[in-house]
Length: 267
Image (cartoon, rainbow, N blue to C red):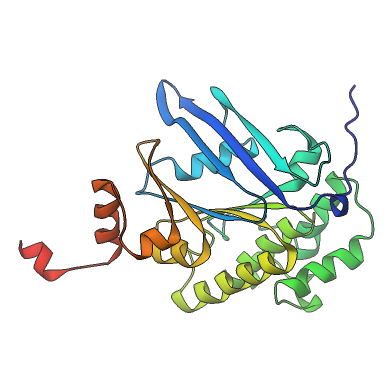
C-alpha cells in the first residue's frame, strides 16, 4: 500500500494549471477533443459555449471525474515547490470544484456540520470545529447553520455551503461549474460577489464554466469559447466586451446571450 504524503497548503502559493490536449471519449463519442488551456497563478479563466459543447466535461477531466483518453493536467507555479501529480490526494486538496446544482451536490440526509467535516476527515485534517465555523463565516453564514439539513436552506444558502465545503480544504484552484445558473437573479449577484471577494482575499485561481457571457466578462480575465468539444477561440474579457471576436460562432453566441430580439425573429 502506498501512503501519499500530506500537504500543507499554507506553504503553497499562487498555483495555476496547464491542461494539454485533453481528450474525453464516451462510447466512441468524443466529448472533448484535444483541448488545451493554461491558467496562470491567481488568474480567473472562463469557458463558454452552448449546452453540450464540452465545458463541464473539461472541468471534470481536470479534477479526475471524467476519464481522460489522452492529454495531461499539470499544476504550475507554487513558488518553486514540487507540486503533486493529478489524481493524488494532495492534488485533490489543491484543486476543488463547486458544482452547478446546489440541490444535488449536498447529501440530503447529512447536516451542514457533517457535510463540511467529511473532507477534513478524508484528508486527515484536524481542528474541525474551528475550521467549520470559519468556513461558514467566510461564505456569509453563521454557526447557527451548522446543524441544519439541506432541505432547510434556500438555493443561495445551499450554494454557499457548497463553496464552504470547497474552501475548507484551503485549495489554490477553484473549478466553478455554472455556480449560479440554478439561482434567482438577485441571489446570483450575491454569490458572484462572494466568489470574487474570496478570490481577491485568498489569491485563488478560478476556472469558471458559464453560458452567461456577461458573468464571464465580469468575473474572468481570459476565456475560451467551445463548440462540439473543441476550442473555437481564445479571448480576453476586454475583447469580448468590445465585440472584438474573430469567429462566427462566437458572434452568434454573443447575439444569443443578448436575449429575445423581436426584429431578429421576424427577419
